[in-house]
Length: 125
Image 1 (tube, one colour):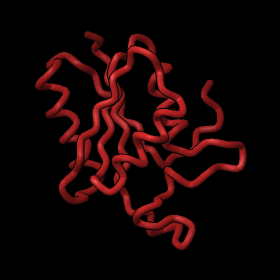
Image 2: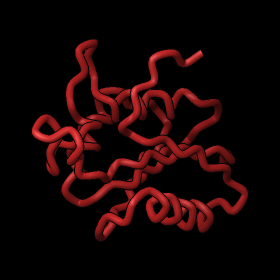
Image 3: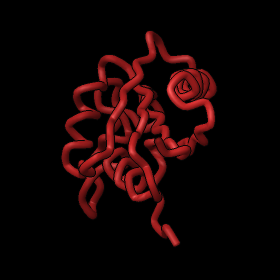
């Protein structure tokens, strides 16, 4: 089991970009001009990390299937996708704590790489 586990945080309601971003279609899912979405690009970066065999995503029930569909577009063979559902949003710290508790149960020596799903990273050098 690898010690690096990417954790994608994607549960916000997207109110700052309203009306483009809405509760059931927040910023990470808005199509980008160059193609894809922020969450798809975040997942693709996560699975490119060395020796990653699992990506944990913290989201909510309303976005679960939309998130899973986005991941299918860039699925990586042999990488397990784990979805943790927040019963209600409590901001980033609570989402990271939820992921940390989950991962520590399976792999106490794991190092989490926390990736917000709503950030655009242009230069990955």
